[in-house]
Length: 393
Image (cartoon, rainbow, N blue to C red; front, side, top):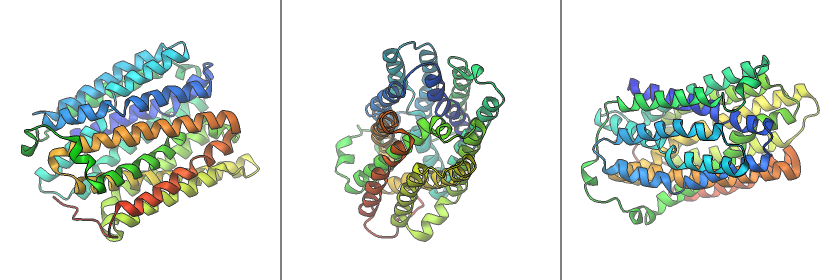
């Protein structure tokens, strides 16, 4: 499993540089919050189409790991386009190209990990223990960025410089997944994967809708956490530490997700993540009156953010694996990335950016609460009984 551990570390370390830092650097470079939000929305809108194509290819490919490797490598090349984008239009186009070619590496890798665990006759609940290495990679790169910025290294992190190490890390992820020992196409996938079959699966559609609304709320935090933290008077280091605290909580919950899910059931797991998500946004929206109080609150609610995502992702992957056949696994997970992380991310990023311009920090945070409320309702409907189906292959 070592190549998968390294793949997640490198891929999410690249995201740790790209996700929180590049939008902040673009704002400092003169782009408006609306322009940045539109660029991220363009990336995520293209994700609605692209990962479904790559997921279908992976389901039918004799070497699906090469699809994941190609996506990571293409993403690394796309960072150069963003680095040299000088206008809002070119910035949006560069993000859109990244969304088309660089968005499929993680969902295909997730499917490879599940298939590898099954081939080794291991419990699928171990997925969270493997996927947690992505969280660790993201945390390390985020903390490094915060330390550099706190010590006056802001100019070195402005575009295009910050995108170069991100590209190197993405290429390293491509090499690692390409060398992994992973199963090829499932025997039942010799024919075409029909997405209409997925569209007829009620449980899968409800899980997909839950992921859409839950992830939409996450995008405001992911894209605008640095400027929103600084708007509360927090230093770059405090913001970075709060992100890392959230990631550490995420890592713990992700590692224990299989065990907890077996104990409380899929329905309770989804309701818990949605409710904590709503509480987090309300807490972020409150100005506690002093930099010290705001810093403490930011740390606490960042921990809630990590709890909400750290538990959500492996649970949703496990429930989807139960809801669809192994021959459609890459397609099903890629559609989740397309609709939930793509279109949902576009909705969240656009809402957060434009409301930040219109209503300030509190408005941007509170705008995410309705997303969490809808996610709670969908989480209840997505699980017909309070206990999940079997967690092992």
